[in-house]
Image 1 (cartoon, rainbow, N blue to C red):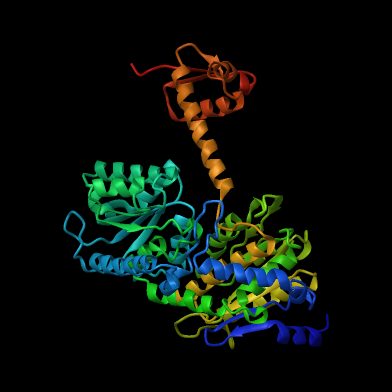
Image 2 (image 1 turned 90 degrees about the vertical axis):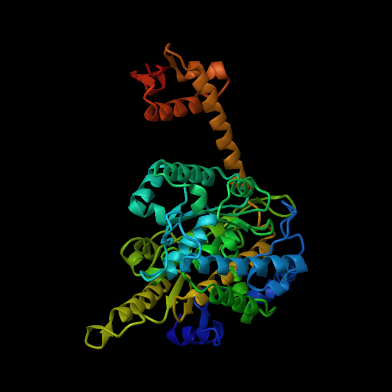
Length: 526
């Protein structure tokens, strides 16, 4: 396409929210000009569904729940006075608690001020706080933060090594909506044990963010933890960052939670407008639909050109893939929907997988994220009249052009700087885009049956492991023989036995020519 035609297309499809400093450019997506008209009925249905969701309809039919993350940044939208009061009260309590921690009104058990924060959660209970910490953190923050976001024993040990002698000044926030998430529970138990081994009372360092009446809520209350904050059942983990899940660690690190919520509310207001050309979230959803033919046929590559946004893609992976990756539509028909998301940051990726993006398989579209302000400090020139930031901008625009020359489509969005307001705005933009896209393809964006299936399968394997342990004796047997005695899959038994043998010296392995013929026995400590 000639440069003059591209300029005309840019003029037509460049959306700017001038008062927000935000812009969205979809001109390098090769959709037909009649796309919006052809999809008018689906678009109108998506706007209507979003309006019903925000008004308190049951928008998650699988779990028969309301979906209320939009209320978190505008409590006046909440469908009942009770929910509005709960949201506002939680924000007040978070601010007061953080202030008491920072001033030393609430002290560690040795009488000193808390200086470190250990956040224990997984999935949506960790990704949001991790992204925000990486985006907004600085050495001047009143508390630094560490994360348990897995059930990896060595991972726990490495975090404790980094905390080192700071453990007595460490506040622990445990986040689990149900209170029964095993990875989070394991991290909590490991932390409790480490504190006890150091002569510290865990309860005097611990805070819970969980559902009212959950196992964790009861445990925290019974053991006299410092505080408990609610996680309502109308909030999903991947959209929980503006609840206590994200606001509590933000406030403890000294970040501006009011600006964060204001940014989200401002983007919500602009993307609530039922006019396609002026609605950035709907335009994103339509571009995703166009790129993948409404079936997710192309991956979404997200390239933020800013180090502070390096975790943005990881955050979006869960938001987009857990929300849209569904086997069935709302009518129960098999559709296998979803959009794969990957990416890291520019210009780093220009020295890694951008080579494939330009010359390889055309199975993707790109979203560039531009941050216009290079740095808060003084300008420094690496060449006459040119800064490092000029290079960053040049690489973004150059890569965009190089990809388009080879028929690769892209979206470009721009914000003036990375701060709490604009992080809130970006999150809100993608939350609504996900909701719109789900309506366009007729799926439930707010359940996660595949995740639950994996949890159930893991539970069964752990139950099998207990049965196997009871079967092990001084007489060595193969995995197949043990499997017959416990009526289980020999392959499952084989892998469980190998894992046990690698971590318990009492379980012995007799090698064999074929791995599957190895024999296992149990020799108790003498």
